[in-house]
Length: 197
Image 1: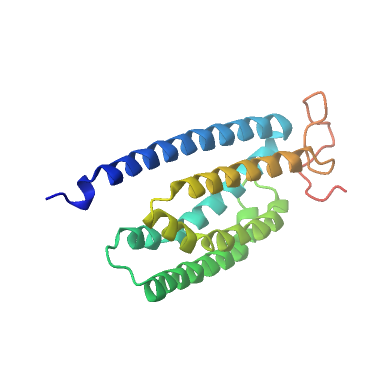
Image 2: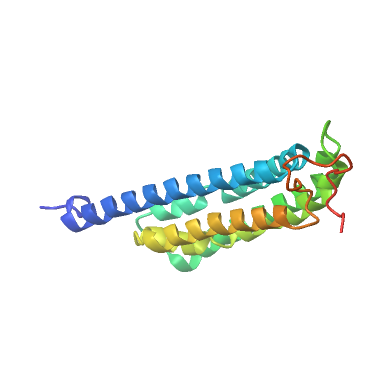
């Protein structure tokens, strides 16, 4: 008697999914590293430090909002999509709203940390929306992963990483961004202003 886990079809799909996700992670790490290097070259040290703080705070919020409910639903053998998925989504979205609001409220406190510019408060507030927006992808991810349909997930994750880095680099190249001048060194009067335009 063959169990579902020992069937050749499932084994092949699992191996393909493993390889696909591994390749996606390699591409994602490469794009993130290239984006970070480009931003480190384009931004003043102060601006790059603010960028690092923003990314840390938002990534922390996104990770906490995920709760692991999606992973629990993926592993359940008998999932009632009508109730299980909607309940998990509601919990995840509710927590993301609370964490997004907490990050927005904490923005002035982050701006008071030693060595941090007070101008970081507004970008932190805007980027806190990413915590809420990231929770919206949970139902689709659960359904795709339960079906072992990793190609759409890999494409979406890669597109997300590439888009984020392209937008960050474009923002650094924007004339009002606080980027370094062509010579690579910030001018004497170049501050970390988010509103020089």
